[in-house]
Every structure is written in structure tokens, then in C-alpha cells.
Image (cartoon, rainbow, N blue to C red; front, top):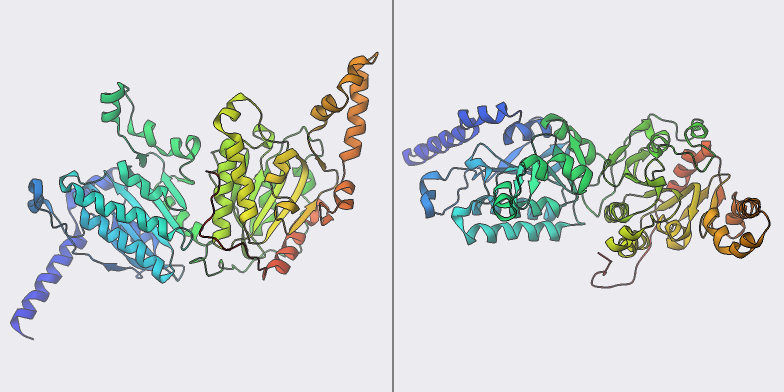
Length: 517
């Protein structure tokens, strides 16, 4: 081998070894915070030995503000591809131990490349975020490169699944990249997302606020609804990513992976009668209903602590992944409000984009009333839910557990809104509105003029309830395909999904839709 080439290879090997070894003090600090490094995270997330790194020695070329002395290989982000459960994925992980994970132009170019390449290859994208923000020394160069990330995230939307894990700070304009992806995971106590940091808030508004109070996991998983899943630590976060990906296809042209079930597809769910009370006024936990229906009780709930009056998440029926949307009577009696509408609509659109059938469990008393909801735009937000169901072409099955009133009934996917199969349980109530409100409208004068208004009201309530209770009205008017016993719900869902598996449905050709936002 020529000496020049031999020297070059030795130098290259030495540089790569130094990069892989990392800065001992910076790594020690990261571990002291209870966090893994970028390479450790990748190693634990991917199948052993499957990671192939790209652009390891890339550096920002800027020399402004002393950057010539500061720049380091990788430029604060590790990029490449590997496998999860033998399925190929593309991944980037910001390296907090290199330049504090700040986003420079080379850093951003690497991330944009990974997103673009994942899209071209039809592979899921995983981003692990841990950065204090943009590297301001680079000025417009870095903002231009970050703009490329936003563009690639947007163009890839609906083409490949994009999963973001916030495993440290994600600050300023860089936080818009995960916001453009499909799912966001956060780690309790160590991850924060916000646009404007505490120092600026104090200077401009005079308010004292910590990073955790401003954008910690509790804020975004319970209040803002920005994040989908909360993890206890880095290891738990990486495990959740693997679990989430197990429900998802690699791209919009493929089907979600089937997992061989250990459950009998025809098994009876005898516990259903105990879970769901017949009394409409009694609450129950609809998550228990879903877990009783799915294979092995394995249900991954998303945004579980945000807009808790609506439950969304992923489970399997006879091994095939399905998305679940269900009213939650334990919160706001299961009514639909602004946040629940947004939560449901986004999830429905994701399922539709990636060929995941949608199971809707309806038990809805209506849209949540009040001046505050009207001021927040319940009409506009509720329309998102209607739009999402109408737009979706994947198999859609609705089961009415107890009741469905008014426009909220349509917003939970009736036949006219595109449900391919609609089942009702015995004793359901389906009407324009609940008995109390309807009686007050229909019989107000008769009640007021009677000798015993309260007795008359009760009589009219009984008449109204008898008229609209039970499945017969729905069946006779073809609102529902069949009345089923609660215990046979799982079997009927699996049968319906089997017949709908090859469903094809087209929509009018257009550039894109204009859904209410």
C-alpha cells in the first residue's frame, strides 16, 4: 500500500476512534443527569449491530465568532440507518456532548438528508432530540439549513411515519421540526420544549418560570397536547418507540405488520356486561372496553392525559393493527369539546394515511355546551372530526355502546359519515338530543300548563325514552347493520375487518383538501 494512502487511513481511523470515544467529561455530565449519549440511545433502540453511520466526520465550515477552533466532527448529531425488529429505519440523534448539541448548518444538513432519504427509501424516520437550540454564531446559514428540515418534515408527512423523541431540551425554532412529525415522546424531568426561554420571558414579561414549568412533559402531555407519550427515563422512551413502531407500516404504500395472535379471534368477551353499566348516568372506563376487545389486552393509548374525554390509540385484532377512537364517560361524560375534536381528527387522519383501520366506540351525549367552548370555536374544531371521518378511506367500523345524540353522533362516524359497518348494543339511545333537553323543547307548554308539571315531565320522558331506546329504530331505518351482544363485539369486529381488508374507495381528484384548521 502506498505510504500516503496508509497514512491517510491511519489518520482516518484515529479520528473515527476519537469521535466514537467522545469527550469523557461531557459524557460523565450527561450520565450524571440520568441521560444516555446519542450513540448509547441508538445502540439501545436498534437491533444489535445493525446501525450504519453516515457523515460521521461532517463539520460546519463556518469560521465566524471563533467557530474555527470550536468545530468538531459529527457537528453535534449522529445520523444513519439500522433495524428495529429486523425492519429498516432511518435515524438521527442529537449529541449533547458535542457542542451542546447545538444545531449548526452541517448538523441541520445532515438531519434534512436523513428525512429526505427516509422518504425516498420508504422507511420510518426516528429523531432523538437533545439540543439547546440553534448555533447563533452561524447566522443565516443555520436558519436556512433548519428551514430545509421543516420542508423535508412537511413533504414527508403522510408518506412515512415520523417519530420524535424529546430526550433533553428542544428549544426555539428547532422545536417546530418535531411538531411537524406524527408522534412526539417526552421524558419526565429531563425533556423540555418551548419557543421562547425563561430568560427572554423574564426580560419581556417580567415573569419567573423554570424550563420544566414552561415546556416539560407534564405541560405538553396534559395541557398543550403537543406530545403523545410520556416516558419515565431514556430506556423507557426507547422501548416505547419500538412498541409504537410495531403497529405502523414502513410507508403509505405498505400495510401495517401483522403479529401472530395468541388470542382466539372468536373468543367471547363476557366481561363486557360488567364493564359497561346499563344505566346511562353511570360512568365507566372505556379503556377497559378496548383492552377487553384487543389481542392480549395490548392497547397503546396516545395523548392519554390530554382531552381525556376522548380516547385514541393502537391495538390489534386477530394480529392486525387498528386505530381506536372512543368517548370516555369518565370525563365530561364523554362529550366532545375543542381539544377532543382536534385530538381525534389528527389521529384519524394519521390512520387513514397509513392504512390502519379505524374502530370507533360511540357513547356520546353531544358536544360540550357553553360560552367558553363557543368562543374557542367548537364549530370549527368539531368540523375537523367530521371532516376527518368523511375523508378517510380505510375500513371504518363503529359500535354504539350506549348512546349517540345530535351532531356529536355524526362526529363519531355514522353510516352517512362513511362507516362501513355500524353495530349497536341492546338498549342504545340514538336521537337528536338527550331525553331531558328534547322533552323541554317538545312538551314545554304542555308541562307548564299541567296540574302536576313534574309528573307530566316524567311521563313525557318515559315516552321519549321508550321511543328512542333500544336498537329497533336504528335497525328499521338502516342506521345500523346489526344489533350485537356486547360479548360478541370482538368476534364481529374481526369478521368485519376481514371482509373489509381489500376495500377500495376513491375520492374526487384535487390538488389537496381545505380542511377546517
